[in-house]
Length: 326
Image 1 (spheres, rainbow, N blue to C red):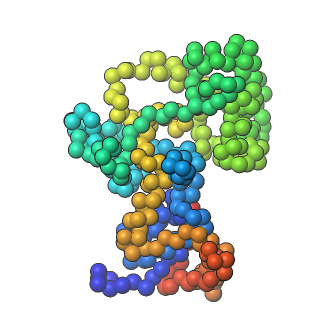
Image 2: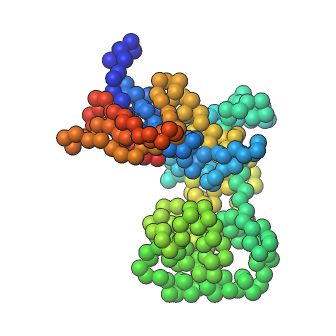
Image 3: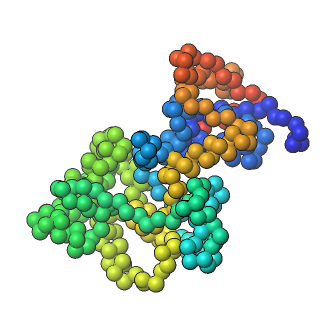
């Protein structure tokens, strides 16, 4: 099809989160299919949004931009370019994983975060959790400061609880609660992980599958924290502040990452702008409530907008029709 010909092929994409918006933009880049995104909320980004309240920006989900996929890192950097170096020298950030490596350019003439908004920052991770009136690094760091705040009694109780979990692990491991207890001990789980996880995800840990933990926390355990702490002692101090060569580190222990200037939601707000600039559509306050089908093919959907009246929307000439949930 030539550039002057207009395609009548349309894709309905349900959900304006990262998956739905990425799908829409890639359809526009690679095909002649016009994506129409329907998002039930009044904004885009899903739980990766950045909520604005009284002039403050609040990340409702903890979203740091770091991936072991070079393709994903490259995709992000093309949406929001990496900030320039303050020292006036071109430099590449080293990224390595699985015995492979790549470089992400950090040029001196990159966007200046003090002057431009569409920019990806390089930031050190600093997450803390309040427990017993004291702030602890999160994920936990095994250092003298942490042990001092816990106190001798709590530290010993955590240690014995962990040993018990190693001697008598829960089998079969069915829930996220089992997953955490087997790797950290019941005492540490109840102290730090249970309430935090349930507040973030809104679901009790004993109702979340253990597979979820394997995906999110991966190989992290109390022994992993110990190894990381010992490694930090001997880690060379000569690595530059921009060095992100941490792909051998468990995801939950990564200490530096990329972060949009105005929060993770800025990434998906910018992607939405790009979709509309290329002729796609993104609708908010538009909740898809049902699907229409003929002869085993999805041909359309029913959408409920802000008026409260359902409206039929139709997919035109897609073989097969593309549906994507975020």
